[in-house]
Image (cartoon, rainbow, N blue to C red; front, side, top):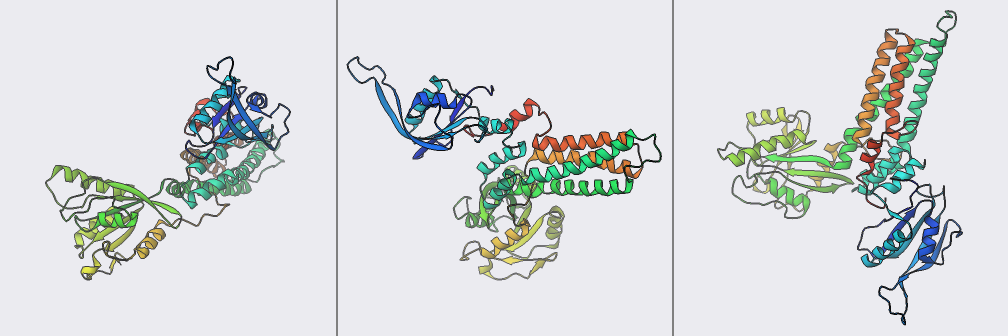
Length: 460
């Protein structure tokens, strides 16, 4: 990428009534003026103008018209630094025809633009100081958000709440570093004391506690971003596939009275109270000699391992050995025991290991509201507020984990009264770890930037 280039790209998906074409770079206005009648290089910023886009008629006869109107558009003008990218920028709103969009882009390229690469507009915004790296990543999360919670999480990060929190941590660490280095500079003056080690330890512990809290929020962030994994398990023919179909409100899984119909996991998602849940219908658990079915049952156990919530269906009271085996497999999961086919009669089982049994009829019940509420509560996802900070990026999580490890060495050193120079070195590493998240005060390797922005849409 050459940041001196002027780039262009469609910012909207094809097929809509209106298409938006973005242009950004040092020649954005002059190139636009050569394509759009009524726009000049001196057109004022923060204005919108009606403009016709014309082009030469292909193979026009000498006696006929030599130009044709491609479209009538609205053109928005932005001048540096007051634009999304921090550069001179133009947005052309045209009709959504693929032909019109392609012709306008062709004209822009002929006039001197280069087609933008994925994420290049947002990358320029980052490089020009319009946002830090964590905010730039939030743009992609905002575009990909599929529910209220993931949307609020991305908006919080885009508004800079995470960056502000990291800035506070950075200030605390800089204070620690400054005091320790002053102590080092004047170590030969025994009568001077710049840092009380007890106070330094308290400050370092407070900082580490906040870093640890942010890192622990990654589990919730990942669940909100990818969907809370829910495994539906039980013996064969207890109604697992019927329950999945009822929850999804469509015939997603094959339902049959034949035992062992489901031989592989089936996944789909639904939204419950603003949270996405990823349901996994699994093969029925039973003793079998069928090799294919045994593979499916092993995948059931694998699904339990990966799930955050396990729905255990049964249509008759389970045996003690079955209960013991399942409790062992789900000891770190939210387990919801479900008596299905309640229309055929009750079972002598109201609770399993202190967990209340929910009775339903997946086939005949008018609604499954009580079960959906139990699933939502089992996810234990806090209500997301605009200012809440939840880590959802694996890159951010790894940086926070590294910061915690390096700060743990500082804490050990303070408790053991190690020399200031050793402590300062570890503190610099912590500062570097946090700088990796925002990209501020640190030169990010090119391959890191490329990896972050390569998943963006063109035009973003």
